[in-house]
Length: 284
Image 1: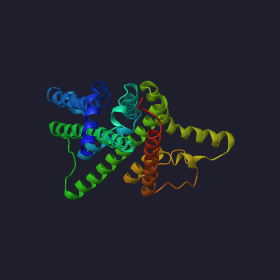
Image 2 (image 1 turned 135 degrees about the vertical axis):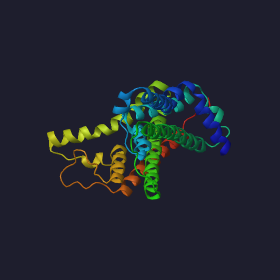
Image 3 (image 1 turned 60 degrees about the vertical axis):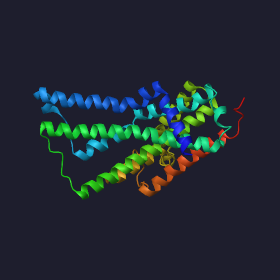
Image 4 (image 1 turned 60 degrees about the horizontal axis):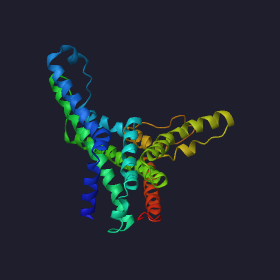
């Protein structure tokens, strides 16, 4: 299994253009921006005055909102679409399934992909976090207290954000994998993945229209989407409530319930992908 994981990791990193412009571009861009801000703060008083720096914790935590933004989700879907659909376009699946069981190959691809993308955002968090601390020292901005209690809270919040990114990557990869099996073409897979990933939050618009035009409350459907539950988990961790355009009397899910719903989405999408992958003839 270790050899299979290593081979998949090398294959992912071998997609140089896709990796560069859809994955590594984010920590690399953050590095250039952080270094630029630090250098400019030494030579320009204006930069020192307008530098917006919060606490050291937020410097590391704020970048984790990016994977669930429109740009972040687009990058993840596009990269996963290339990873899965290119196997069909290039005919490389048939070289793999003769050596391993199909479900093992697919499960390993999901795991490797999730770790690969999460690593990129770990680097993004480290670059921005360290850059914020250095910039704060340069401009004389207090970065907040540091003790073991604060550090423990920070590690808990960081673990939660990393877990959400991992789960979100699995869900986006599930959409892309199913799209690749249907279309077997990279561009078509990207379109299918984007429609599923970015179209899923639009159920909130459908809920609003149904409530306004037909007096039918479908908010319960939105509450079971990955978008709602990711937002609810983050809000719950911050001690706030996430319930956009919720009807009166709506009680948000607990954090545990939202995690269980996300787990069901992950298992269902990966399970459906594996099921579909084991059925067709892809050796010819």
